[in-house]
Image (cartoon, rainbow, N blue to C red):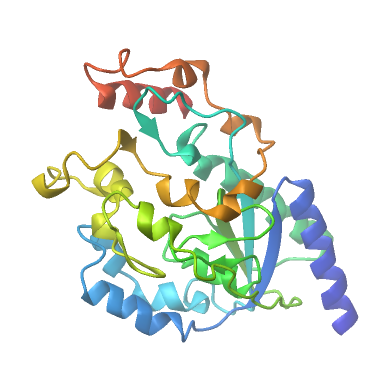
Length: 290
């Protein structure tokens, strides 16, 4: 039985690498005891702002067996999106993760291929793929699976490639070998906390989502509050400041996924070309990228 688990685990991780994933880690499916009080406190302090969906499915966020009955393993996968080229300095900025084709489609396709591979090579399994669109605490599972540690900016960090990658999951009723968490390597560094334009990192490892530039430029449906206007440093869709200043991201490597490459018009866009309506410019760009 142990030999079979080892063989299956190695087989799956090798295929994940072939599909282009940076790494793959596996945890035993079960209730996230340490995360439960943290999530409850975060919600009670209204740090989710108007993201009411964060209040839904509390139990499912903490227990994958409620998403996939009989689940035994949570497989976490990382996919690099660090770009070969970045935007000009004299332009309105969007987060690097949004440069190319919508990542939900790209990753979901890879996960479907991986799940199909498992069914062909190992046998019929019950499983579901998740890409940032369901009640799964992806960073917590990735950390539990040894893919990195939760940085002070609350993003997953690795010493090898920093933090510019997507996190996805396969939750399976398949018994596999489990990985162990790694240690925290943030040390005394406070670069992310010091650099946040809106002071959204209220204490190490705690981000007030309702103060984050990404929240204001993507999630918030109402008017941007007057007390934060003028603090966005030209970010119009998301924000990379806390990642850009992180020392570990000096090890970021360029991705090799053509679908994440930006179109030339994004790289050539300046404040002058988008001055009349930067929002309209980027909405048009995103529409063309789908």
